[in-house]
Image 1 (cartoon, one colour):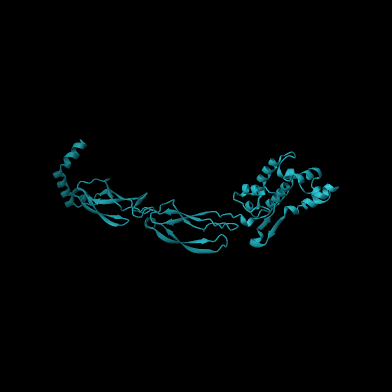
Image 2 (cartoon, rainbow, N blue to C red; image 1 turned 30 degrees about the vertical axis):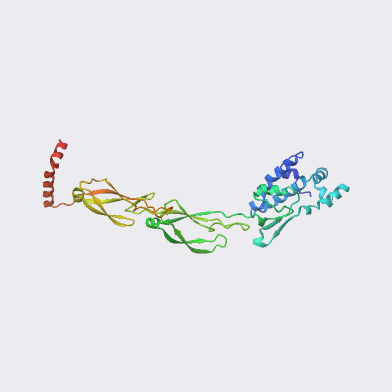
Length: 331
């Protein structure tokens, strides 16, 4: 018993502490050092044993009285007199506390802790937060299930894969066995960059029968050179010949859903926007709804013009009075 620390020191309280102070100190210390929150930490387990032993004595008025009088000797049989004998018989040399038992299952990680005291039920409720209805003449840590954590990873998809949905195969490693496997992941139509696909139970494993965490695949959608996405709408540019812009006509516009012939009004200027209804991205919430496709008109001016074409253009300019306007503006 020479190596045992003073029970009051173990709980971080003064000798004159009230029963309420003792209980508060124990709750705080037990929550900090409990093995279920310090898995594999042998030092924390020893501290938890020490804390629980101190509390089992100081929380019992009779045992506390004997301890205050004889110290640790009250329970190891070394104190003189009948009082010490009573302590030895009544407390059982810490065997009355029930001890700590380890079992070989799961690599020896299972431990059993037994407590005395009717208020232990309330204390453990405070530590673990659950409804403990069976009483605590003893409890089994296997009853305290701990859910696994979610894991996040990135997944790249093309512009069209995000627009229409697809199935992709990814390789993942089982955190409990280390075994790699290939699984199919469905990418829903309409998903956008920053959204996640949740794979149930593919995260870190739970402890003591708790459920596994999930794997969250964060989507990154690749760019497409001829289109830009903004929400459910798609934007592109239509290159319209100079003659079509002047005379009017039609131009083929490539959308996600195929080519659409768009009417170009006579006199259309560069920068004019055309709307193609319901040819955008499908809604993830309602597959019957789609965004729109917006087209910006860009007038193409021919670079190589023959002498005959130049003559015709000058005639066209003269007929439209464009030369006079240009001359006037230059003056």
